[in-house]
Length: 226
Image (cartoon, rainbow, N blue to C red; front, side, top):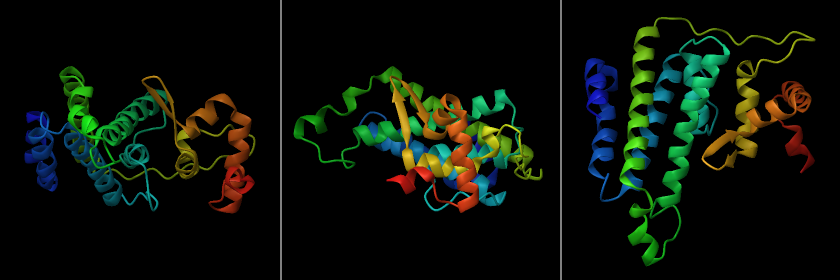
C-alpha cells in the first residue's frame, strides 16, 4: 500500500484517493468486504478520471471491466495482442474484486447471523493480501501511465473496412453494450465478458451483431429477439 501512497503523493491530481487507501487498510481484518468495496471504488475512480481527462465516453452505467479497458484506450496503448491481453487481465481483476465484494458484503443481500459472523473467514489472509496487492499494482500502473502519457493524443477509433476482420479492441462501443446486456461468464476462477466469448467462439455471429449494432445505433439484435 505504501507504493500507492507514494505515487499519489508524487502526483497531486490523485491526492483525494487517499480516503480509499485509508478505508482499505482500516478494514482488512474487521470487515474485508468494506476493503474490497473501496478497492473497487479506487480502480473505478482512477479509470473514470483518465477517461474524463482524455474525453473518452464511458456510457451511462459502465462496468468496472469496461472502465479499465476504456482507460487503456484513453492512454493510447496500441491494439496489439499482448497489450489487449494485459488490459483484459487487469480489467478482469477489477471485475472479480467487485464480484467478490458483492458476495461477502453484509449489505449487498440480507444475511443470516451465521453468515454475518463467518463472512470474513470465508477469505483467507493470503487471498486478501493477493487481492489488495493486485489492486495496488493496477492502480499504480494506471496512474503512472496516465502521468507519462497525459499529453499524448488519444488515437481515433479505427473504422472497419468492408471485407476486413473486425479487430475486437476497435469495437469498444459494441463490446460495452453487449457486455452490459449479457454480463460475464464464470468458469471456475476465470471470468470472461460476453463480447469476448462471442468473438472467440463464433466470429461470424459477432460480426453480424456488430454490423446490426452499427446500423441501429445502440440496439442489439439479441435484445430485439427477447
